[in-house]
Length: 98
Image (cartoon, rainbow, N blue to C red; front, side):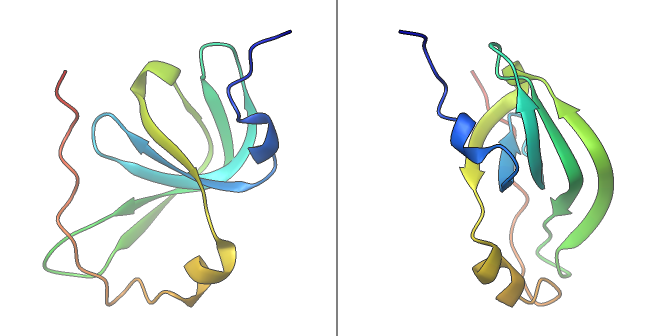
């Protein structure tokens, strides 16, 4: 039996990735490999601040190395669409320290 990462069910779905350096990147999962390197399409980075709303920087087609991924999660598109990011305030995430 082949080992799986659980990402198979998320292909062609919108996901949110938190990287080890504290970035939040959202996009459509297009592929991944055995090292959990992932390919996102239609991606953007969400930059959080305590002083202004969430900024969203368009990245487009984007590759993230597996060793830089902290968390991968499925995104609830309906809930995400209902959020007013211009009014959200939050501290930026700090990098993961090993």
